[in-house]
Each structure stands twice: as structure tokens, then as C-alpha cells.
Length: 66
Image (cartoon, rainbow, N blue to C red; front, side, top):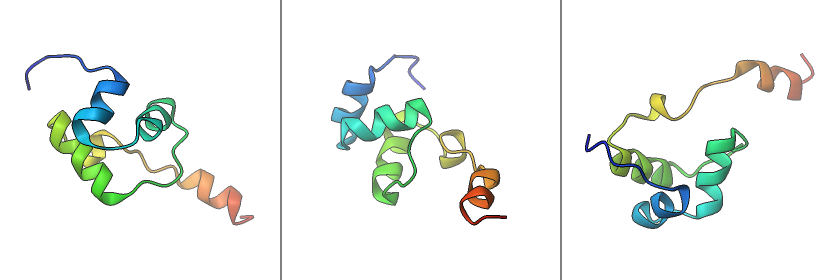
């Protein structure tokens, strides 16, 4: 890791993903994400998927009426 900081806009630009996606991920509002976009973000950030996404099974249960 380089320790450099990227703005959400710059991260989206470098990763080649929509800036709206980066903003939604940052705010915890992303419901769906393209796996290729996720892979590009991980590559640019030098991280693993589980460092970006957290599974919230509770949200799934609420949608299904459980």
C-alpha cells in the first residue's frame, strides 16, 4: 500500500467505474454491484472484497418477510 489518499471521484476515475457507485458504497447504500467493477476497485485499492463489502443478512430477511 502506498498510503496515498484518493477522493471518491478520483478512485472512480482510476478504477474505471461510475463515481455514483463509489459514493453509494462509501455511504453504505449500494444494493447491487457489478463484480468486474468490484474487482477493479479492489485492484486499485490493493485490498480484498471482504474489506469493502460486509454481508448484512438481516436486510435480506426483512425483504423476504422473515
